[in-house]
Length: 178
Image 1 (cartoon, one colour):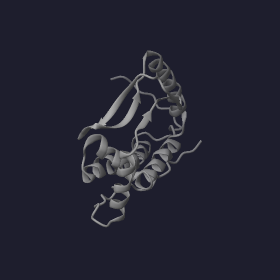
Image 2 (tube, helix red, strand yellow; image 1 turned 120 degrees about the horizontal axis):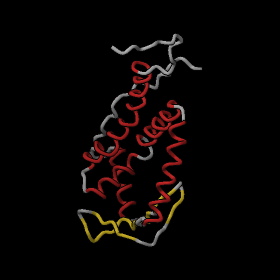
Image 3 (cartoon, rainbow, N blue to C red; image 1 turned 180 degrees about the horizontal axis):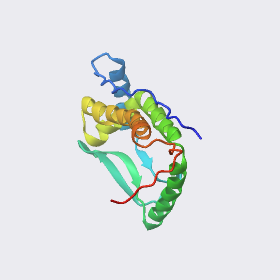
Image 4 (spheres, one colour; image 1 turned 135 degrees about the vertical axis):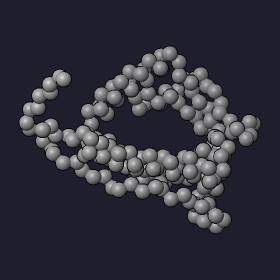
């Protein structure tokens, strides 16, 4: 049995990018906005990792331009909802039996992906879907989520290390009522 608590990297807040004229982040964001504006996404339900196209579709438009459709969303019916619940319960069993270190590694990997290749995508999507400025999207979508995924593994470590050690004491302790 392991009787130590591994230490994830010390978390730091994600720096907020400035999106100043001529900056690489501004160029990447402008290109991604242009790409997303030119695309109408077909969004299926995802149930147990599989795409489910129901045919019951609603169109998502930009809040600042109601004539611009950006997505066609397949709505779940009762059958899909029940399948999703069953899938979530199965996933819960797997996830809750996974070592906490492995779960934390998933979140840390996601934070690194978001701070890199996916940052412009999430910020552009936030701007187009919620009518936010680049600064608002940067704070609300990218930085907050990156921080959430970075800090929570350290909070878990603190709980296990300081409040709930993963190893029980070797001596049996009896509790007596007052």
